Amino acid sequence: MRRKAVPLAAAVAMLSVLAACGDSDDDGGDDGKNSENTASPAAGAGGATDLSKECPETIVVQTAWWPDITSAGAMYQLLGDDMDVDANAKKVTAPLVASGGKDTGVKLELRSGGPAIGFNPTSSQMYTDDSIHLGIPQGFDEAIQNSDKQPTLAVMSLLAKNPQVIMWDPEKHPDVKSIEDIGKTDTTVVYVPTPYMDYLTSKGILKKDQVDSSGDGSPARFVAAGGDIATSGYATEDPYIYEEELPDWGKPVESQLAYEYYPNPGPSPMIRPADKAELAPCLKKLVPVIQQGAADLMENPDPVIDKVIELRDTFKADQPFSKGVGKYSVEQMRALDLVAEPGKPVGEFDTGRVQELIDVAGPVFEAQKKPIKDGLTPEDLVTNEFIDTSITLGGE
Image 1 (cartoon, rainbow, N blue to C red):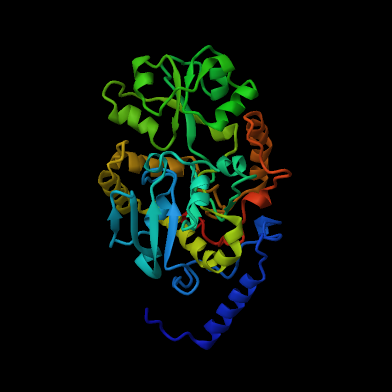
Image 2 (image 1 turned 90 degrees about the vertical axis):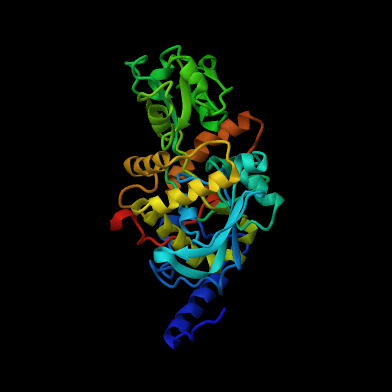
């Protein structure tokens, strides 16, 4: 593409940034150390949005599910209107646009995951297909689980907290106010297999004989039981669906985030650590664009919701997604501080919380005969070096 001449001062600044990038070791060196203070000042909020010099012509991102708002909405925010949709491959490619619809000079390809790829975990898919630049797993703890054989490095977090919850009927269980309260009863908890449940039962928060891993994510069993059981779900979708879109239920449910016991961050764009040196110049400019995309989504979600619905319909996704669910998702992301803690930069990792998760999830995976990397540290899993610390929600 034709490029405008770069003023001398800007050129000098750009050379300085690229030189700093060249100092990184292939294995990541000590980039993660003191990661709370390693945000790159060169990123610049709302700075240069031309990614064509530093980034691949098409940035390929493997997501964990069908197009949605909660786990990858910030990525769909970056899709320009001129979308090339491949219904068979369940992927979409479009110009990557920064805040305000600014063309960045590169394209973004978002590939659906989960049922679209036979439920192959994102990190495994990344090691099967080296055309993928960034992968977004369903939960951050996947990076811990696969840290020994298929390591990944998260370059930001799309959600500070995973929205997984356990839900119950407040009419049938008036004394239950928390997951811990459920554990004091004999109520059956139906769930889709997930590591947080193994942690809850290992600590006695829930009893092993009250949990049932045969859940498939459908509300049918909960409805058929008349609310006698509790069930897993997502804070950003299921309470709305149960109350507003299930005629056979049609009333509120209560829920609590599993995060309050099992500090799992939400979906996080990750790279293969071996690719870090090559991708670093791109990530220094791309990550702040994604951060701002996450903030913009919270301010004006409607266009992205429409895009997600269109793509799901085209892909013939096996789960419906309505405008109401999309709006509720954003409301809950705000209400529960899922995107970022108040006053904290969007996308920044709290490495102390990452260490907590290693401490609680490590023994779970060891018990499952899935040993994690020896001596695993937060610096092996996350880096804040590409984060623009000036990007927060609502300009806070």
